[in-house]
Length: 509
Image (tube, rainbow, N blue to C red; front, side, top):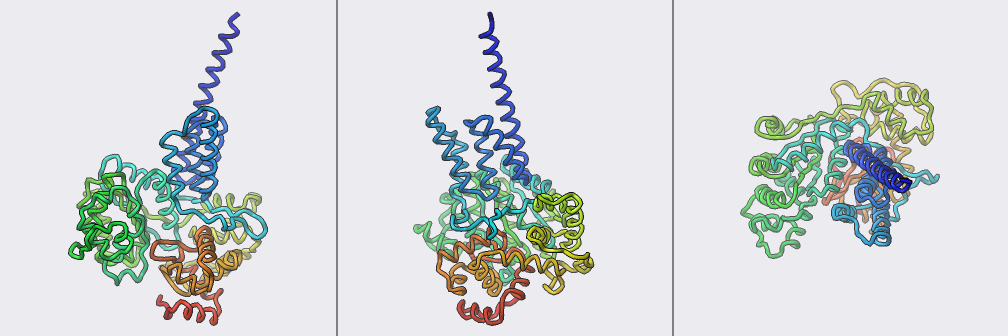
């Protein structure tokens, strides 16, 4: 007697604790993903989905982690399977939030299926983790969230020397915000932009702002001002009369205001120190005029050369501007050791300690170089004996010439280059010769490849973080790597052929 009631109680308790376990696992996954621990977050999300195969939250956490890890196709495949399972077993659809997330993943730029994500020896290509930046990422994401909740503009500044990981941190933050449905407008300034009035504002306008909901509600004069100088804006808004009476900075502010009425907006600029004067000044005006908008301006900058406009802007944080000012520093030994453990999984602790000491010396704690060294060690590079510390006092990575780098760093860059596909090697060599912001069409002509083959090579180079893309063209993630490739991997004859095919003069540095 009572067995049925007991069994009912037991089943209810099991269901209750199963749901609680799923909730804890999903929360843990979301927290880890929020601070850069994508690998660990993915494992928790997978456990949650295994416990509750029809949980929308577990699925959302899982496909989010897969997308953050670069597996866009896998995330969409998992969503499609989940959707089919719900329809077959329960006759329902995934909830609206998960469907919206899947659609945002679907719209992302992804690596082409033809890009090989394994090395020639069959080993899978694994992106290095974002190590040692959990605190900074959490602060930036929380600042954007606070700006959206309070509808108050925020300024977020990430400062650090070249190679310290500013670009990677900004990319990771922007990727997470985009998955959350935040509208993103991003750009990367280059040295030549300093001499081009409004080049920064126009780069921002081309950096995803056209995809932001709500911009059609902006004043016609503002839309016409950008349509007058940017063909893509003219095509999107053919009815907006071209208008050169409204300054581009003012036009951008009005369009951002309209976009922020629809959903939160983040304006992200990398290498902000190279912005032209007009664009740098416009950022301050935008933050002033849109102080009550759900707008965050995220800037990555090196300390030198100093820019008075940016210094003045940063000094307002905590006074009349909400926001954060972060200074990225080289990775310490503990962070380098964790990075080594992730990238050299078969190494014993003693070997990890030895590699960490050498990498700390040769990389000076710069994540960019530490990752290249550890990749090369995984392929058999012997780091040899400890070299003298570098860079020299008062010198930065950007001021370092290839010949002044430790031999192990140069060797690691060469090894990484040789691991690329032949087409990617040719495209990367051409990009090293041609300089910053090289359009894909120019690279195509420079290496005499078809558009599809060039596109596959560029996807490969982006995946491996050799190049970074924006609407204006492709640039090296790090200037010092470009210099090493140009010096060591390009012959004089190749250089002349690339310049001739591209119709380019010798680039200026």
